[in-house]
Image 1: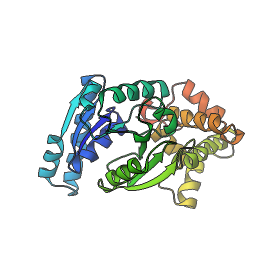
Image 2 (image 1 turned 180 degrees about the vertical axis):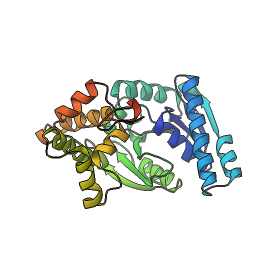
Image 3 (image 1 turned 120 degrees about the vertical axis):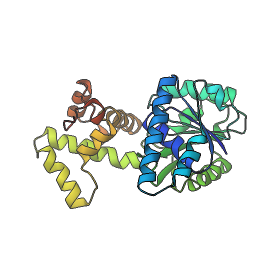
Image 4 (image 1 turned 90 degrees about the vertical axis):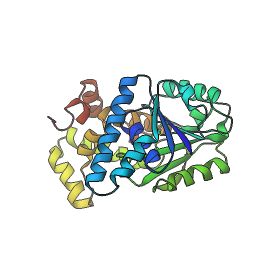
Length: 280
């Protein structure tokens, strides 16, 4: 299958990696070649790590890279059977991408989005093929995490759903179909927990380490909510909480003022070197 992935960031390069690893011809598309070169290098390093852990062979790693091409123009997606958009969570940007993809791709092409919170129905409405628009929300890190949330928009057809579920299964993933409501399932459950942890810290209920330890040792979570927020990015957490708050109009989704203040200060977590914790 020919697949195009839009966006070479953390999620995009991971999605391109798994599609290429499982035998698909993949074109990774971004606005600048330097972004693509960085993504290609990341994929190469991740494949090398998998070889060292004996999860794949050296030959399989080379074959994966051979199936991966890059481009800086969305027209390169024209002959793809599936396109997966994986840019940052901004509707205006996604709207422009999907409108362009709708114009350049075959009418049969399925247009997917890795959005973690933005309405698939709203995204589909920017195209003339709402029945062929669907969500494929991968988890980070993509090569390791099994889950893919398959989000069905209001007009997504049964055929599109079946195709996308099979595409995820062919990657060795476990697809879970959800309906198009704010936050879907993963972030509707996860983000309020992270937000509440921020409230606990802000209100002085406990120190950051104590909050994380309670969830790790008491609830068997692999990492605490504040550590996880730093890993995800505090700006992304805030954006998703805003979507939940706006989408449901319920005060229980109100973003924590401390979370908002930290984002305003540029404390975004691991990627900025400082969040709830400090990073070298």
